[in-house]
Length: 351
Image (cartoon, rainbow, N blue to C red; front, side, top):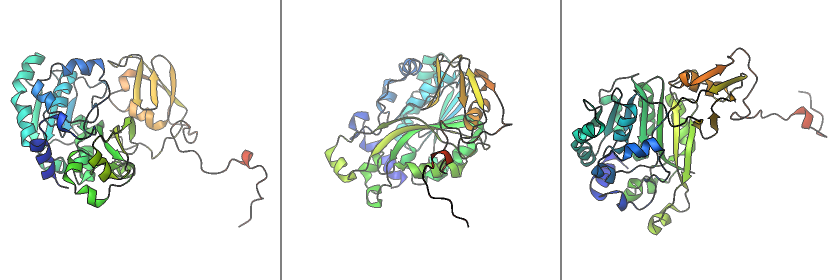
């Protein structure tokens, strides 16, 4: 299914989010207070044309330069523009003229609403499969976000690879999208409604991990996920039991990450200084780091904090001088049988 279907579905078929047949392109979780406050400053027409499946507002982005892939009518861009502040920037890329028209029409309205001297938002028309053709600066962006859009493109590997090149060292791709529990059959991939509803192009989670690592994102981290409800009986029948989830991942441009989580006896102490997460900092779905307490972490998690914009918010204990094996909390356990559990196993054979 090609980009023309996306332009048609989101530009002409859908008049607003109420026209969707599933909740795949909807956000159900409650926004944090800062995002909720920022959303109140987004123009009603922009909000009415919003189609997203998650919240793409990572922590500690004040002053950051952000690229929004598939920015649509601009809701996420205008929310992020307030959080990064007047000294940060947000660049949105979208391929649907009708959506871009809405986003651009309200640039000045939002600048005045935010009280900025000049707008810190711009929108670029383009295909996110062909980011290299848009003249965007490489090694520049602190964060790249995307909200339920990568599933709509055919060449997903191209998107991840380009995102890696555009990020500065230590930057991250923080995005929400739709994932399936198996590869979607080819005949369903060509269904225009299933494609427009963000289902037929959903990433099989195993393929996503391969795409991410091939691009250079060596340790994808799941932040949040939820199962999707298929409320339309006709759509559900076509899918024949395939299960879908909306999920948010964060991928760091840290080329020295290891392929799995290794233990070096390290720990961190969170200072409680990230706005909105003063008590507990959430790196991913199983690293909730309470302020003021020693928190053991693996080597990869250490680098995600020490070699990124988060470094100033932590005290770091230890180094990489002693390797202690696989980190038990998030690594892969040793596959060999523990000698102490062998019991009455047969004696080992000689070779």
